[in-house]
Amino acid sequence: MKLDELKKSKLYSEELGIDLAKGGREIFKWFIASFLFGKRISEKLAKRTYKTFEKYNLLDPKKMLDAGWDELVSVLDEGGYVRYDFSTATRLLEICEKLLKEYGSLENLHERAKDERDLERRLLEFKGIGPVTVNIFLRELRPFWKKANPDVLPKVKEYAKELGIDLDKFNRKEMEFVRLEAGLIRLRKTRDKKNLA
Image 1 (cartoon, rainbow, N blue to C red):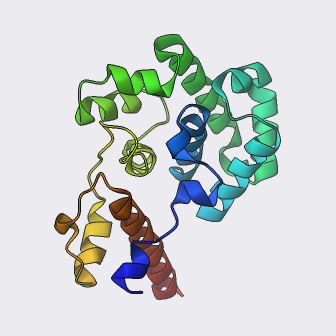
Image 2 (cartoon, rainbow, N blue to C red; image 1 turned 180 degrees about the vertical axis):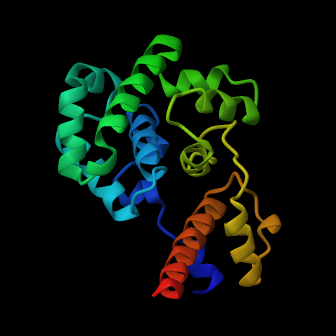
């Protein structure tokens, strides 16, 4: 794939029909999708589970809390998230509760963060949110959130170097870079799958 094509890659959020430029509810939707992508399950399963939450209109912290544990487990099972359904339902409820209680919204969390590292630290304080999830969530928010600017994953840097792409020549806060990064992630995953076959 040529560099020009990579720079036009579809974002993972766009694949799910999430418009991050709109902010508000769309940011929370992407947060939940990132949480699902961050677990040790296939991308396909994470997408299907996200779509199941969408189907039941459970992509809002209050609605998730109102639905309760049993309903979240049921939605996760329907999405195919069976292996982690109990612990994931528990984590989602804890995340929604903490978010509403301490910040009210993800935008408020962003506003209160002093800088990029503080934003990442605050996100990591949520139980069940690790560095991978934070990276997934923030990398597509770079053009929209001033303090969203996570490091490029080492494997992505390595792969870009293999392809002769100098990532340092790009402004990480621009959409072109975010699309390039998404394209590199997809390409690397495809290559890794071929190598395993």
